Image 1 (cartoon, one colour):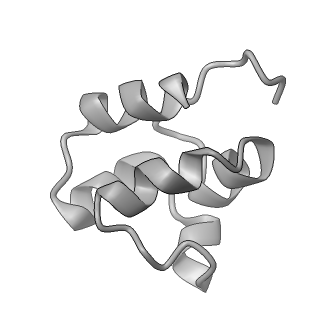
Image 2 (cartoon, one colour):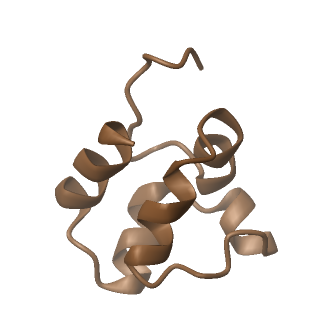
Length: 66
């Protein structure tokens, strides 16, 4: 993933964090504190948003701004 490539709902949290560490702050703001756990490395952004009750499009917008 290039730095300018858009983050999508199908990417895993682990992928996003590896390519842009600043996104960790966005996840943390939304109560997603277990960024290093096994679920985070394999869970897609869409799955994580659903589990945490976060509006997916808002989360994606914030991640892409980071």
